[in-house]
Length: 312
Ligand SMILES: Nc1nc2c(ncn2[C@@H]2O[C@H](COP(=O)(O)OP(=O)(O)OP(=O)(O)O)[C@@H](O)[C@H]2O)c(=O)[nH]1
Ligand SMILES: [Mg+2]
Image (cartoon, rainbow, N blue to C red; front, side):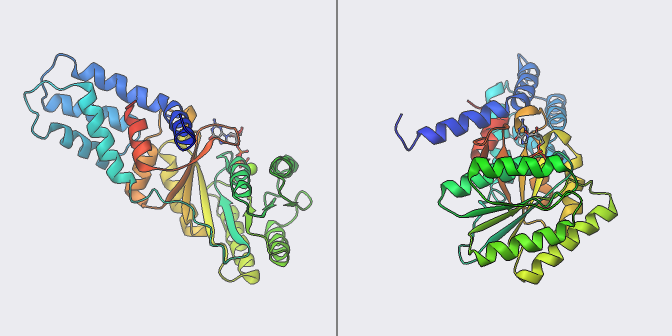
């Protein structure tokens, strides 16, 4: 193993291990379906059901079943063939959305606002991103915009210490828009490279909390009319279909520019990322496959598609 392949392999391993619950549920079901049977409509319907249960969404499930059926009626088909078709079709959906988060170095700082429902993984993702950006030699600042809970401020401070990034925090209960304003003003004065702004978790159907988020965006623009330069919606893969309505609501309120999907290691519903990509076509920048600082990986269509299909 040389230096260029080592990180790639370990990332692939983390991704495929992370997605094991999703891929093995698809793989086992497909294997059970195709043994010693000739392909017919009933088998395709069963394959479609398996894919729907993994949350890939109706359109994609139907398309995959059609692709499996094409030219194969009345023939025996192996589980590996089905998996290969799954991987190919899923990759087609994901390829247009798998886009890196590009930091525009001309923005000082490049402002990243991180939003999402309670517990989706926002603060942890900020910590992981701070580590990544610092490792790239960028000067990072964190803003503890979740002012609701004292524990949230503490949690961000710990990530600040770990990643040696300064943290701007206010008192618990203070206004999160003013906190964001102060943090951005300071980061601008100090000509820092990246400002990562944490926000409190909020349910997408709570109008008051969504209005507060709108205010954060408005106030940030008073310091820099072009900011925020990225609005990342952090989605927890384990919620399944609810992620679709989260994307709609947060996109409407805060103009989401890209997605991060966390907890792909803890769910059999990783297919939701495919359904989301098909429906909303928002860029997917990263996926989280664990709680550790290294467990955030850039999203790549081919790797994800193969991992979800359970191709080794
Ligand atoms: N397994 C796993 N756990 C994760 C991942 N990302 C975050 N977590 C865990 O999920 C829990 C919630 O993460 P937080 O980062 O606090 O989530 P949050 O969105 O900031 O939560 P609130 O601020 O309460 O809205 C923590 O226990 C994290 O360690 C992931 O990719 N995989
Ligand atoms: Mg948090």
